[in-house]
Each structure stands twice: as structure tokens, then as C-alpha cells.
Length: 87
Image 1 (cartoon, rainbow, N blue to C red):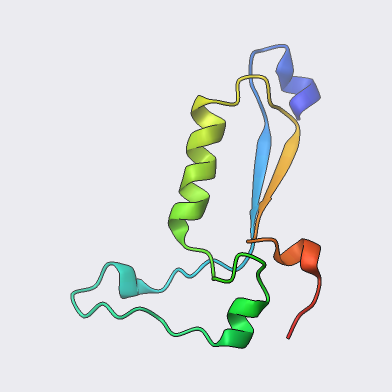
Image 2 (image 1 turned 120 degrees about the vertical axis):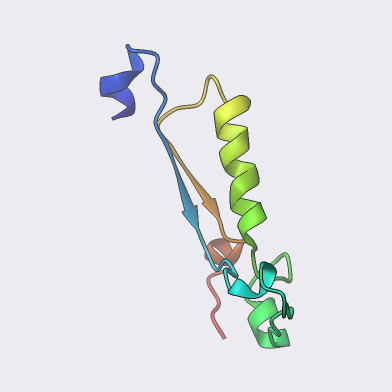
């Protein structure tokens, strides 16, 4: 698609999220931070589970600051896919 649409000034990129905590806890009146075990966190080199804001920031980057970027897939998984060790 990036090749087909590039001539029209359209950039085509993708975001592939990893483990993103999307529980309703963030927006409810009875909000509780979900508990992730040390083993869960250890799967990610950044030592935490992702949150929707991690994905939103990548979307903003692509929309605002990536004018010369097209045809790319951005994996946002806290480094989990490069570690490739699953507990």
C-alpha cells in the first residue's frame, strides 16, 4: 500500500502492539491498578506491561513527526519480541 499510495502523498504505516493493559480500571470510579506478577513484568525488558498511552504516543508520532516514514511496521511491546523468552 505504501508503494501504491505514496504518489498521492499518503503514508502507510502499521503499529503492532504487544501486551497492553486495557482493563476498565483506568476509567471507572472504582479504579484499581491491575496486579502483574514479577514473572509477567520479567517478560518485558522495560519491566512493565504496556498501557494504551504507549500506543497513543506512537500514533501521534506517526501523524505529526514522521513525514518521511512509510511502509513500516512499528512493534510496541516493551521489547518482549526481541527477548523471546516467555515465562
